[in-house]
Amino acid sequence: ETGVTQSPTHLIKTRGQQVTLRCSSQSGHNTVSWYQQALGQGPQFIFQYYREEENGRGNFPPRFSGLQFPNYSSELNVNALELDDSALYLCASSPRGLPPLHGYTFGSGTRLTVV
Amino acid sequence: TQLLEQSPQFLSIQEGENLTVYCNSSSVFSSLQWYRQEPGEGPVLLVTVVTGGEVKKLKRLTFQFGDARKDSSLHITAAQPGDTGLYLCAGDGAGNMLTFGGGTRLMVKP
Image 1 (cartoon, rainbow over the protein chains, first blue to last red):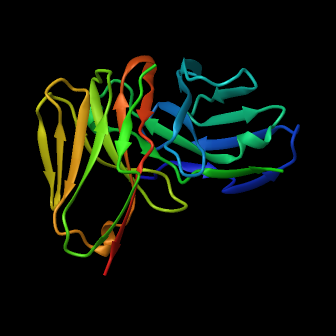
Image 2 (image 1 turned 120 degrees about the vertical axis):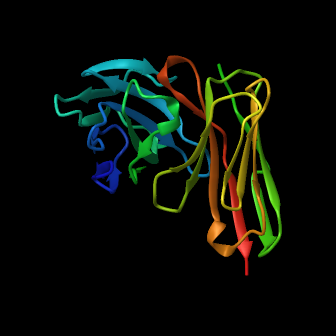
């Protein structure tokens, strides 16, 4: 069984640019969540996708948007990049409907640097 | 807004010592999860606690969920260098989101 895969692993962008990060969920998992982890901090919830629709959102501005595809993979798009967007972006998948004991499976993340 | 506070933020100990990490909140969570994260990797689930007062053991790691489901602790017995890493607690609450604590960075020196 494959885990969660994210691409690219590292990315450098200029302030004001747009970026798209990609995530393939673990086999059998139909829910994908995105988290932002700044250096030295715990991850912060951005949003979750289920059945190709946003199913919960954290305290992030609208320039953070996402998509989920029929195969459950997902994209995170960030427009008008700011220096503070520099962080590790984590994707987590889960089998919706199962008890919380199963937790979430995280990918290794995309390290985004905005200069 | 649900918040989780972890303490201590940093811990540097010698191999063989015991340690406890605390995770506290004023909010009630339906479950609480502990993760361990290595540099350059995503968090890996260690355990989920669901019932107030629950205690779970994973080899030398003991996890406890508070009676009111607002706090949790992680105790490591006889720490080893392989235990080095970032330990994160996360509460499963409202809005289909995990609320993470700030993390405890543990270094175990041989």
